[in-house]
Length: 317
Image (cartoon, rainbow, N blue to C red):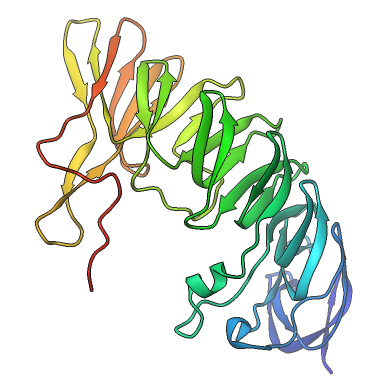
């Protein structure tokens, strides 16, 4: 049996490992049982393929400093984390050795094993958070290098109610925390009336996708002030110090289904002490940068000439 040398000792390797320029291991496939000593205890990397949902062997990967980066587990294992004990099929680590993310499930989605099949295996987790104990089905639970809870990524269709600086809110897709524990962001499950530095805004992003819970459309400063909000129901009027007027509103686009229907691209507002930045969609280029000094702001309900759903249309096949 061939082995490679790592900071965790010699590891049995299947095939040729991928190496960094200095010759240290970047990634490898483990060829047999072995235990790695980690900040979560001794963990056994996956080395077998056992059924239709784990029909491939993901690689064991390392940071450049030699510490383990991503560790798929041979069997589902309960690990002790800062949020409490969590079941895990995959764990990742920061380069200082602290846990980065815990994935309770790590099945391979294929034509034989779908997201719906995987979701049926998901169980509610009891999590110790800065908001108190929460129970939710999570795709992943993330932690910062310092050990604090960073974010929760919820399963599609999962919804929980959490306490936010603007009141209790139904949340979907994810929520995140500042390093000190204050709530950083949430993804509202439904339109939520939210006080902002420019007036009340109905927060909701119909385009939100739950890749992870680190960044969401309704974000707060550590002091609890709204820093960013996406809206499909509110427009913003700004009268500048020179007397000119600027109207900002969600955009209306043709449906990606190509059937003549229309959809909303949300208006995203980001706030600072000096300016309000407006864009269409979370990745759009800034449409306007409006100075706060000398500007009078007013929020209004957004009314479109089209009857628009709040959720993107599901195209028929």
